[in-house]
Length: 251
Length: 276
Image (cartoon, rainbow over all chains, first blue to last red; front, side, top):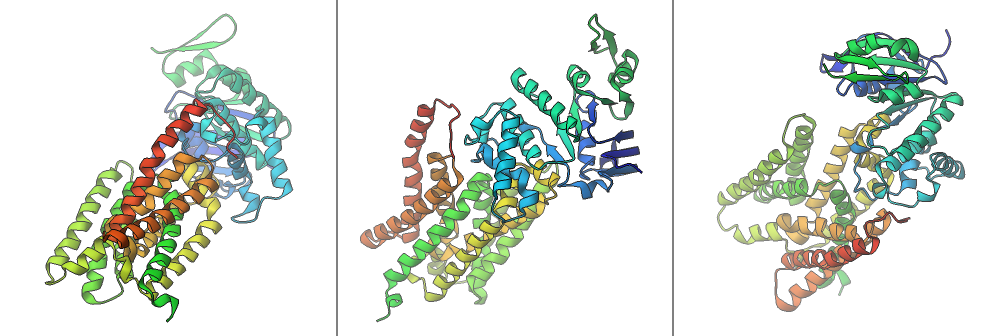
């Protein structure tokens, strides 16, 4: 069987026995970009956390990098939402990116040239090499998100999970993140990106998984983001406008 | 005559050791916003210390046992969603102190010892106290050095720490128990009630001076040791209680640091600038 970044079959996930999301079928291979789309509260974060074994698997089978999700912790790169981090913490941008090397470094081995190079390369990639010595919390929201992306890249993961990477991010940073994600997947890394922004989803995805409490559609963009599936997932009216973009209107 | 036989020599040594210890852990306490929790730990230590001195065991053992119960209790409470950890901590704080007072009331002729447990009695520090403080200082320094990475990650980014396979709950307990050990260790010098100011004030002041972790840590240690020495010197010269002198000196350092922090922020105009 070919190696898969993600393989979900009939998966239900939740907390303390209560399902948040049901009926998820996913198959993601190296170099593919999967976008998890759906409204706020749809279960996108829960699904991403399930890929690290941090939520309860209530049904179905799930493997991540060909192993149980909890065993993939530390192997997959994870980019949290910047809002969940403590902006007052006295850490520099470079220190934050170095955290991405902790898997190689262990608890106390000092950083070597290879680690420092990986950090420099990652920062350079997201266009923030000149901010390495700045305090993380002093950067803009978009820049912080790019630093967190650089941190994940410094660990050279085969699978990269991003939880709402475009939330509260300015246009310049969004463009930079989209560009880097395209490069990273072209180099063979599988990506999972959650967003409630359908325009970004359409721009970035090879595959889309449309969820809201359950999986409503999954597959290539054209087949997935139709007026019909969106209407079902969002419970409202989806209207197609002239340039081929879909707008969801609350009922 | 041995150098250690001099009361003042022993007091100075203890104040320096305790200052380094308080500065090191204080940086973590302030960074993780655990000041209020630490306040509760100091008060919960009080009944343990009283009970130990009533039954005649080492007060460090009694304080550590009582504080560990509270540290674990608070860690468990704060993990339950929907629980108001601040309310629970506040109740533990006054409850612990009340229990200590109740225990004191069961004994007659206890008021002198009581005051030394509350505000310290640095001039009666003996060789055992010094050895205990030095051993704890070495152990805490070792722990904070060896576990620097997991402690940094769990403090800064909990979701990221869990994704990396760290148990954030376990590391919270490690930190809380370390804080508790420090609180108990500084009791002979500054007492249970005044320990908080020596732990929190120098670290909070240091954070106003710098954004760099190594600088903040160095300054916190420096401020705490200086507060100890100033407090001790004031107390021997003007016959003020030493614990109170140390506590007031630490508070003074924090107050004096405010204008500097304001000037720093104005100078930067809140702009991003290199810190490393």
